[in-house]
Each structure stands twice: as C-alpha cells, then as structure tokens.
Image 1 (cartoon, rainbow over the protein chains, first blue to last red):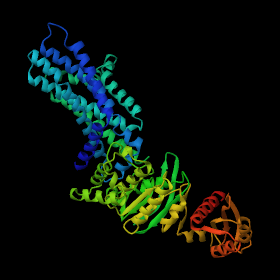
Image 2 (cartoon, rainbow over the protein chains, first blue to last red; image 1 turned 90 degrees about the vertical axis):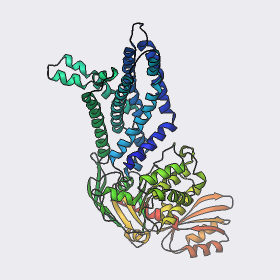
Image 3 (cartoon, each protein chain N blue to C red; image 1 turned 120 degrees about the vertical axis):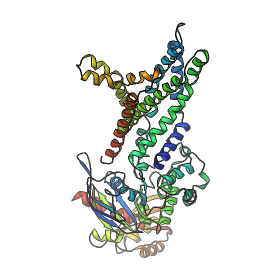
Image 4 (tube, rainbow over the protein chains, first blue to last red; image 1 turned 45 degrees about the vertical axis):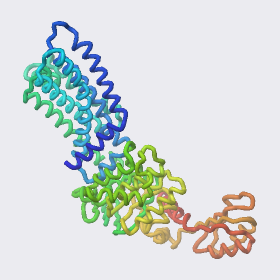
Length: 240
Length: 314
C-alpha cells in the first residue's frame, strides 16, 4: 500500500504541476456548463429532480469522455520518456504501479466533480431536491469516472503513444456505450447480455437518486477487469 | 556478486543476446564494450530486472532474476541509456521519491538524498526543476537516482553519452569514486573513458561475448601478446626531423602527422611494446619541444577495434 500511495502522490503532483490536466478539466467544465444551460435547465414545467437527473446524465457522458483524455498519459508517457525503467527496476509490483496511477487520476477527476457542484446547488437553491439524490448522483459519477479511468489506464498501457492510447480507450468506451445496438439483431438470452453491458443503462438509476448493488457491481467489475488487464500488459512487456 | 549463465534474450524472432556467460566479483568495476546494437543495453536491462530473459540464469548476490526479482531490485541501482527523470519535479523532490520507491526507511531518506546530492555535485541545484537542467546535470541526476539507496551493484548504461569533455571528466571522477563502495557495471562507446576507470572488460558483439578480461588479457587474446600500441604526441617545431627520427626507432611501425598548425603538430605513432622513452629521446634529439605523450587512451580502442573487426572478418 505504501508504494501505491507513493506512486499516487507523485502522479497527482504531476497532474497539478502541469497544464494539460487543468486544460482538460476546464474544457470539461465549460462543456458541462453549456449543456446544463442548454438542455437541463429549459422547460418551465420541469421539476427540480428532473433538472438534476438531466444534469447527471450530461455530466456522466462528459466524465466518461474526459476520463479518456485524463488517463491517456498515465503509462504511455512513462514508456515514451523512459521513466518506466525506473519503476520496473524498483522493488514494486506492477499492480502497485497501475493502482497508484489509477487512484491519482481518479483523485484529479474529483476536482472536476467538485467544480460541478455549483449546478446541483443552484437547482437546490431555486427548487426542491433531496440531498440523497445529489449524493447518489455523484456516487454514480464517481463509479463512471472510475470505470473510464480504468479503461484509459488499460489503453495507456497498450502503447507508448498518448494519442493512440486515447483512440484505443475511446474505442473501448464507444463499444461499452453502443453495445446495446447489438441487442436489436440478436435473440435472447444474448440480447439481454449485450444490452446489460452498456454502461449508461447502469448509470440510469443513479441519475434518479437510486443506488442498486447490481449497478454498483457492474462499474466495480469493469474497473477491476480493466485494471487487471493493464497490470497483465505491464507484466507482459518485461518479456518483450 | 553476478553470475550469468547461458543468458539469451529474443525480441520476437531476433536474438538480441545469445548464450552469454560471465561472472563479476564484488567490488569490481567492469566495462561493457560493444558497438551500437551489440546487445549491451539489453544485457544491462536484464541485469536491472527491467526485462526478463528468454532463457538462461542470472543470479545477483545469490538471488535469481526470475525467482526473486524484488530482492535483486533492492540491491541494484540502474541508470538506463536515457536517464529516467520526471521533468516536472525538482531535483530534491525526485531523489526523495526514488529513495522512498527503493524502500529506504523514512527517517533515512533526507540524509541519503543530501549525501547523494553532495557526491554528485547537485546540492546547489536541489530546488531546480529537472526540465530546466542542462544535459550534463540531467545525467548527474540519473546517476544520483541509481545510487541514492546505496545499492551493492550499480548498472550504468552509457553514463557519459552526450556530455562535453569537462562533464565527461567529472562523470569519470564520480564513477572512480564509487569504486570500493559499489560493484559497478558501466557501458560506454567512449572507450578512453572505460580504459581509465575499469578493472576488467566484457566485449560484446552481435549479442555474444567475444572477449573478457583485463586490458592486458584482451591484448594477449589477440595473439602475440600485444594488441599494438598507439601513441599520440604533441610537439612544437622540427616536425619532419622528428618524424624521421621516430620512424628509425626499433618497434615503431608507422608515424603519421595528424595535425600541423604552424610550428605545432600532432603525431600518431603505431608501435609494438613500450617505446615511449625512446620516442621522447628521439624527439628531443630532433630538436622538437615535447608537449604531450599519450599512450593508454588509444590502446583500448585499438584492442576493441581489432576484436570487433577480427570477429567480423571471421
């Protein structure tokens, strides 16, 4: 755990000391604010809880896309600059490297979540929303962010190019977003399987303020599998 | 300290190193010589536990690189051909991070970092961001990270690469100071650097060790007990008379004027055996002023070239 925290601390400091992370978060915030104003707020007959649900829907999409860009450098940059040799020649496990980087990226993404709080607080100030609704929504966003960051970490482990890492992660996220379409051309039980793989279906209850174990399990499982795969890739690279 | 037995590493279908066998004793400073692509970096990466071997056995301090890589990693310091530096960190912050990463206990970290910065002459740059450092300082930070946890074995891949002559001299002195405190395995293309700091040499070509031993042993392996000697002489005045006098000496095979600027010139003398006293006498007799007589520098280069060319011809 000491090594995980050590790597995580350095990685988080790298996010905070360089401009790229801030720029990505600023762009995410700008787009989120625009979309909130354009799509979530309008409609006089809209209830506060509906506005909040729309806010979480929009923010979840931005979180997933932003995660790809925030995580693309995590391991690819280490290989690009040669610093991976430092980690490989130190007495630490590959899993510790992956977990340290993942936690740092998730910590940095939390800055984005904190910066979006003004939107639900505005809704709460001018309407009536349950705090539990906000808490559940943000729990869902954190799970979406964790899955996105884990997929991004895996994509970043596959290549030394950050651009290619972003493309690979983007393809994986796109596959998890659109796999329900396959359900239209398949029969049961395959239809149920491919439909249940789509991440936004599992986020839906969170946006309405509901937390279900099965949906939490889905995001935890995606995160675990992606981090496991990233660890295996790092291990395999020592053989090449 | 290090035993390498049948070490082989393939990249896909291509063997980067094949069936290497060598041992290194504790406290030795070993020079690892080889042309580009000979397999030096791959070998050092395997010893540094960065890469795993395809086959063969490597043990360091009795620990196997495949079975106990963590134990080995605690005992080694590795400087790859490109120093593994995080540009956004300060020198002190980076060395502290590496020290902690290598498992040094918290209460010792600060003193180790201070000590290594003093040794590598980085103390006055401790607060500088690494991205702002010159190439020479970056290389020093690279060496500092390799030795900050006081490892038994230091593996330095091309530590003098890209440095200017002053920086090379400083790096050479730094490595020389490590002698006795660490076992050092150092690779370099600049053979004159190797010749002045190493006890023994491993010569690798096309992924195979083609010779190993001291400078004298390598010369003997070439046959005839000598690799030939190249002497460089800087003198002032009477260049032609000096050339004629030296050419007439027994043991001198060839004399070439490599530089002629006014009265000042440089001669390259190829000879067999120790002819320097006779050369100096001949130069003085010719009326030339002798500024410099240097043999050692070119000797290892000569051996290296003969070894690698001989192997290629075979």
